[in-house]
Length: 131
Image 1 (tube, rainbow, N blue to C red):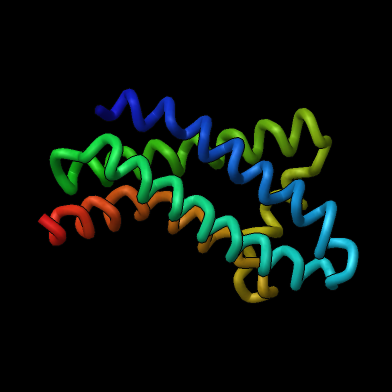
Image 2: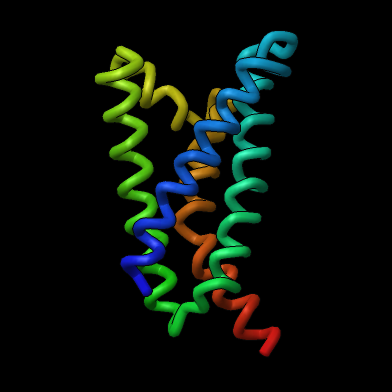
């Protein structure tokens, strides 16, 4: 099951990239950059939540431990993608990439990372309670 969820991370990456493209093509043009970043983080959290909810019903997890392992793997994969793509494809500096982690300046990307880590566990618990 873990392998299926690790492969499903590719779907999460597509959803997250699409969320960023939508931001850049629409409201990112009219909102201040920080507000667009914050709104995009919220819409990303919702979109990822919908996908993880669907996955949790498609492939029920067997334990909370399994869900946490998947979430931690997704976290590592997301950060590796973010820094790999951001640094080597988009050409951003490490300082620019790390700036999105500064909650004190209103940068809420770390909340998205927290959600992607805990979402499998949260939906495992919801499915478990529904049974």
